[in-house]
Image 1 (cartoon, rainbow, N blue to C red):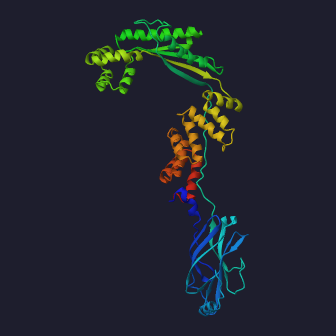
Image 2 (cartoon, rainbow, N blue to C red; image 1 turned 90 degrees about the vertical axis):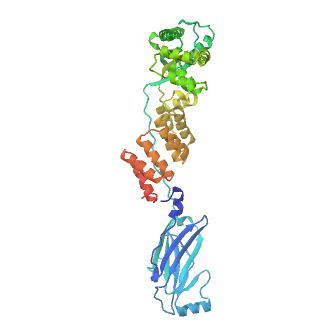
Image 3 (spheres, helix red, strand yellow; image 1 turned 60 degrees about the horizontal axis):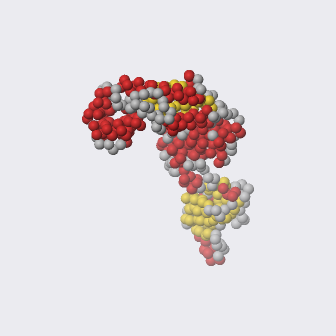
Length: 467
């Protein structure tokens, strides 16, 4: 099997006919072309020719497409006496060839290459009466079909239409570190770093609240307490502080009570675990093993940590635990739909995060597939939705169309296992000359209803890249 990069060379190596006029045998025919010349070579075996000693036959190779023709240099097969006479009188002129009937001739000739030769024939015409050649007189034989048309693997690429989002729900998330007085749950807005932390929450809300295309549907605040002290008190603090922050935010904006939601984590052991895994603190593995031991009650776990690792505990209490006391907030909102191509284009230019995949596709579908803008639309889709299977499938198809195999492979790694993704993986395998994989993937896609896979398999067979 050949690789895709060698198809053109292979297609111009034409198989020769075994027989030619007047019992001359032709073999090892090879026809090539450069930008300026067509080059023909072949072996002529005249050993079986029936020819009297005083006779000769002239053979002229001709390239023709039925309308145009080019005559290549003639070669002459002569009987014994005729051969001697021709040599003595120089009756055969260069570059014509003179040979005896028992000879084998290694023939080679060239002519200026013309476009019509791209699909033509090489024929051999015999002149037994020295009366010139006439095509179609019956004393001729086709030696080869010439086909210089470049054959390439050209699979059909299909793009998947993303489903429309009838309700475009989005979320904005953040973390605030609100400082509370010791053992208290009420908020002091001016206390320590609270002005900056409250400003962070407000900035996140304001972006959505002030956007005419968006509407807040829910704000959820999750309060976390650190593990020191009793679990019961930590749960009280985490719950009370989450509720206090939610009420404070609601009053800032006069939100309906049903917009605000709260939850809490009494002791943030997960946050402590995450810190420790990235740290180089002494006894790190033993400490992690201890805090992950769910057979211990939280209070017992904390007491054992304090007792067995007093130095590390003092460090954690001072420098790490304050970061474990946090408030995570999630702002859920909906964005209105955009319908017209022009409106979507304007949003694409200024606030592409507002668009659904389907809306981006609407614009892409209005563009010339060969244009840079078309590609940029799908690049935007995969940038806005980097883990979306459909966005990655479509971008992989566009990359494969342009023979950008490395990017296509990256996109296909995130394209999921849909039949269309399987089909594109088969196309990628074929373009990478992994034909066994290509057949397996394309057959799988075909059985899953991708009709284009059958076309791709047939192309690979026609190009003799697979059996």
